[in-house]
Amino acid sequence: MRRQVLGSIAPLRAGARGWGWYHRALEKMNAPKAAAKSYDYAVPAPEVPRPRVAFSVQIGNTEPEKVVIEVAKDIVPATAANFLQLAENGYKGTPIHAVQKNQFLTGGDIVAGNGTGAQSAAGGTFADENFALRFTEAGVLGMANAGVNSNGSQFFITLAPMPHLNGRNVAFGKVVEGMDVVRKVENVYCVKGKPLTEIKLVDCALL
Image (cartoon, rainbow, N blue to C red; front, side, top):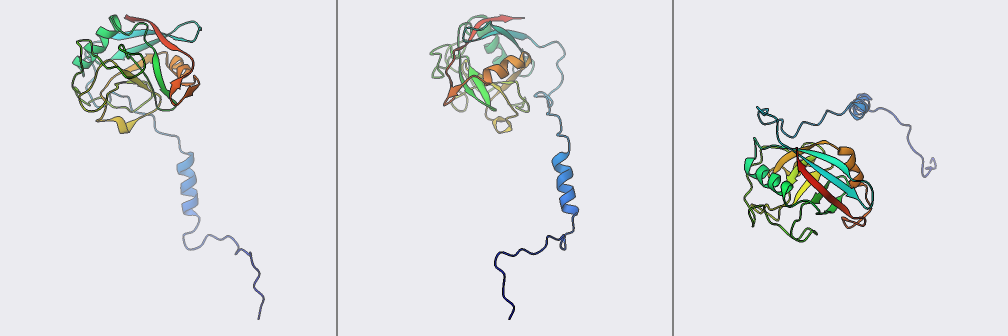
């Protein structure tokens, strides 16, 4: 009787499937990724330029840097109007109170400054307007909420595509300038999503 050698391994061979599956997997892995769709790909192009807001963002004691946001007033007019009004009178001096790396950063709490307050420009909260715009890319602006129809002043900016938020949070704008500043905010050291360095909107202006 031939002695069995423990731990011996049969020679690697293609088998019945051949090597085609391996080469196809390599091609798929090395193929260039498709470009992310714009957040407003599913809606008509605006007939007039969309309004814009400039935030001056300060991290700690550094020099403030500018982030410019396009607001889709043509698609979500009520949500946009709330944000634009708060940009004129409300957001100045408020912090970015939460940062989840590779997901989103959150700010706009004009009540408590820590994510517990929610009050719209008109007072109270307001309903979800529609979900026509999508969280298909980094830099999309959305309304933070505590459930259905609970929008107030808090907003978030995505740091990556977030398709699971479609139909749950109202997207209403996009960063068009200063995404590098947003990335600096993303990289601030945090504990459980709370930045240990103060990040503040030291100024806001309609453009």
